[in-house]
Image (spheres, rainbow, N blue to C red):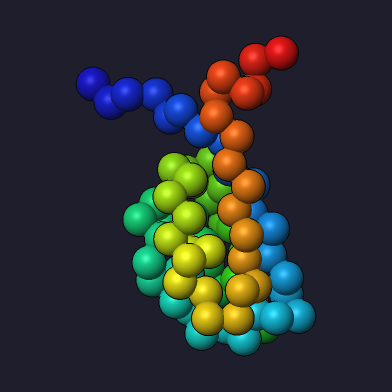
Length: 76
């Protein structure tokens, strides 16, 4: 049995800065990210994001930011 995901992540992508290199897509362990028809990154499956921020850390142009909210923060 798999544990429930403990985070919720939102991807903030600056499409003007994204040059479509695909590094973020390659390093995403959840296959969340894809390149669109203009070779710009987008979160195709945001619910699968585990909040590791590898995409954010690897982007050479600082075009992606992952905002992570824990389950505890979501309960209000």
